Image 1 (cartoon, rainbow, N blue to C red):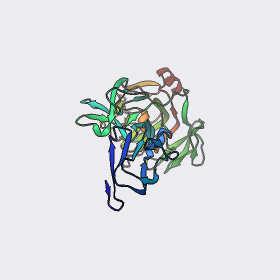
Image 2: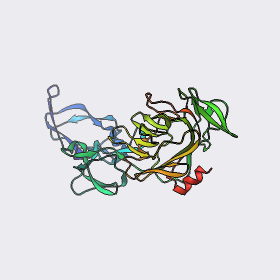
Image 3: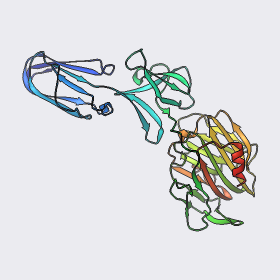
Image 4: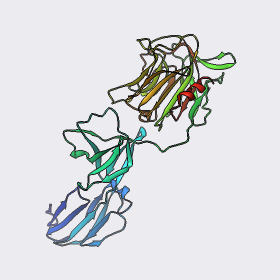
Length: 384
């Protein structure tokens, strides 16, 4: 690079992004001027270990990531600037789901190399197993879905299947309800989470209060009545049990007992009946081709209160009706962890506006538990 105005020529030498060093050398001329050098913002993760030297001597103070550093002096032929940009691995969460993460190494996004292996869902990776390999400074390995996977810079992946986003399991917590809405207030439009975890929900549309003996319940009119619950109900859960008590007086295909998700393409729902006449629970994540579902042999029984529960864990979904297993799928495509912080959580309606509302029905005792309950636990829950 030659500057005609100053009569100075500079040469830059670097193996970036493979190397963490770059050199600038004055190869001709001399003049006094200010040399401004960009300090990348990704260096913030290296905790101030970036280093700038001129002719082997360190200059200035701490280099501030995301800014320019300036060196002003009388430059002569042979002067040499070295900038060391140390890189570390950083796990970055997706904006809509902190349990979905990508990993970068300095300016490089790392991708898993999967060759001809087709991925149905995001692999479950263990960040603590990430290690650099002898194959090169930007080659890594980690355990994903219990098996080693090679990670390399995304721009080096060619002619094979790859993965950039990973599912990362949360830290274990004590078992318990993460949300419990009895739906028994009997007045007003607010419904309260008795677990104390989430904010109030609300009755919406034509939803009103009714009674079942001594117990209050939400009555749904089948036109637009439903319950709106707060965002984020299933967020960060590797296992999950969702349960409720429902009375369905009129069966309509695709009318939801509940639907949790972001849109008609990301959902966890339970419908009282499908067009084939079966109660179905289903889970799907936008961008994934397949839907995981569990079918009962028939619809929910109309005209009476029924306890329903869905458990999800380790690729298995189990649907219970009145405490008895009604369906099982041991090859669920995705798990509840990928739902993220759901923004549309509706007992009594679907996220898909073309589907009917739950008609002539009532619902109460909506619960979410952070484990997949056992069959005996579900049976006792159904018995009250």
